[in-house]
Amino acid sequence: MVFSSLTFIYYFLPLLIILYYGTKSSTIRNLVLIVGSLFFYGWGEPVWISLMVISAVVDFTNGKIIDKNRDNKLRHVALVASIVINLSFLGFFKYYGFLVENINYIFGLSIKYHQLSLPIGISFYTFQTLSYTFDVYRGQAKVQDSFMKFLMFVSLFPQLVAGPIVRYVDIAEQINHRKENFHQFSTGVTRFCTGLGKKVIIANTAGSLSDLFLQGDFSKMSVVGAWLGILLYAFQIYFDFSGYSDMAIGLGKMFGFDFKENFNYPYISKSASEFWRRWHISLGSFFRDYVYIPLGGNRKHFIRNVLVVWFLTGLWHGASWNFILWGMYYGLLIFLERKLYGHLLEKLPVWVQHTYLIVVMLVGWVLFYFVDLGVGMTYIGMMFGVGVTAFIDPITWIHIRSNIFFIVMAVLLSTPFLVKIKAMIVSRFDLFKSDLHVVWNIIMVFLATTMLVGQSYNPFLYFRF
Image 1: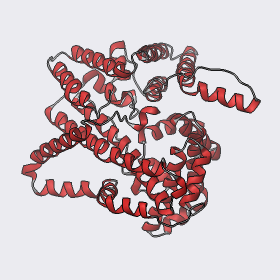
Image 2: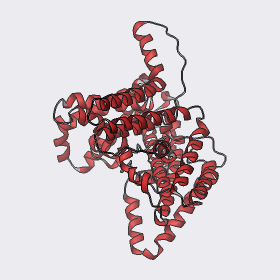
Image 3: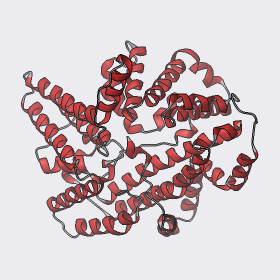
Image 4: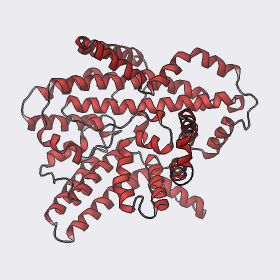
């Protein structure tokens, strides 16, 4: 089940809201969320519910051991056990096949293996439970005494399968003592509807258009066609993932939780470093706090620390060399900006800085998209005129003219421009603020429903990670 499905919008969510607010008991409300979340996850992954529950048991137990053994070495053992067990689960299900394939290739072997299905959301809930044991170990979070509340944290359906990565310390108080109110619920509905519109109206449309270029006949590709194809994919992955994050944050608010933001208009950035402060913020902050800083951060072994973090960032996204190359590509860019040309870049006109980011970002998305590195390198070459016969071809020109309104809207929605316009309207006509939100929500749900009727299954892109 996905948020952008008619089943979720018209059946699952309304029923869960009725059951949740049908009682004033916080214990029963927690139970409703747990059962609802497990049902939500089990709708598509009934087999792997057990794995998620085991992860919760492991980290709940290790958290208790750490808390009770502050003055002896058993707390170190519990932390190591949490790391080893969680990463073993993640490594086995996500990277086992990749590892065997590379061993076979390097040593000329033919080890047979069964390709395992990847449990949905394992990359996200593994990091969430790990953050709990890390924070309890470091004294930054109080241990959770109730397993039911901890299981609710792990299984909470809004952020379960595709993030954002919600740390226990950020919502601990809300788990124990949250106070739902109408304003928060209403804000959550609007945020959910906005994310729904991003996913169904913008991301799905951009994905259909990008496939015409990225999965088409490269022999007829032009320079403009190559850039347009990957630009459309950039719109797809941004509105898809940020749309999911909006929906997750909105759903959280409906049930009394405040999740941190996961995107902050990354495409307006002026450098690769700034881009990653704005894109998938929860993942970047996780690696910063639990890998980069413990390794020494900026103080010592800077090059090593950057390479380790970006190798892991790439590997986290998938068991494939293109993701590792994509991660290392950004690691190299960030290193060069920090040590070589970053200060020069800052002195250039703003439009030049933006152009630099757009170019390196789009090249990065090519590495991200094409699992076959040879095809990816060929595509990058076409973007710069290698292996193409024309700067622009008639088919590309037709697509640009036919979809110019959509492209312009996607560009504007990638910036705070329309949000600022909306804020000006709301401030000028404050009496109509709630009415505007109601109208907006109705329009988003109506358009999304219209587009979803008869549409084939179209999950969020980050479900695969």
